[in-house]
Length: 184
Image (cartoon, rainbow, N blue to C red; front, side, top):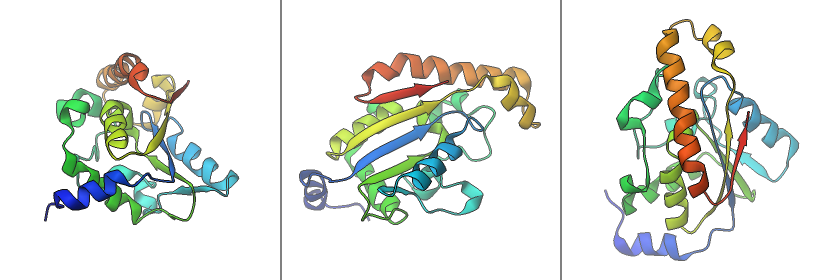
C-alpha cells in the first residue's frame, strides 16, 4: 500500500535529528571494514543490523531499487542499477521506514553501507534532501587487480571495465554531493 500524501508530508516536514553516513565503493574495497570501525570506535554510531550473509548492506534491506546481488563483477555496467535524481519518486522515501527497522534510532549517527551506492549517489543525495535529512558520503576505491584476484568468477576485462565505470561515474557526480569523501 502506497503511503498517503499526508503521511509523506509529515515525514518530510519533520527535521530529522540524525546524521547519516552513506558508504559505497566496489566490493572488497573496505566498505564493510569502514562500517565496522565506525561502529566500534564511536558510541554515537548505529550500523544497520542485518544478517552476516549480507554484511549489513542496506541494499538488501529495502524494496525501492534493484539489488546488485551476485553481480560484483559488472553491476556498474547494468543500466538498471544506476540511479540519479531523474529516477526519484516521492514514494521512495519509504526506504527510510524499511532501513529504520535495522538501526538503533537512539543513536545520532546512522550508517548505510552498500557497494552500489557509488553509482546511486545523486539519487541518494536527492532522496536525503527531499526527506530533509543530513547526509555525508564516503567512497572507497582500491586498485582493481588485488580485488580481481579474490573474485575468481569475474572475467578480468569485465571487472576492470566495471571498476572504470564506477570511477568515471563518481568523478562526474561527486561535485553534486553536499558532503563527500573519496578514499583511495
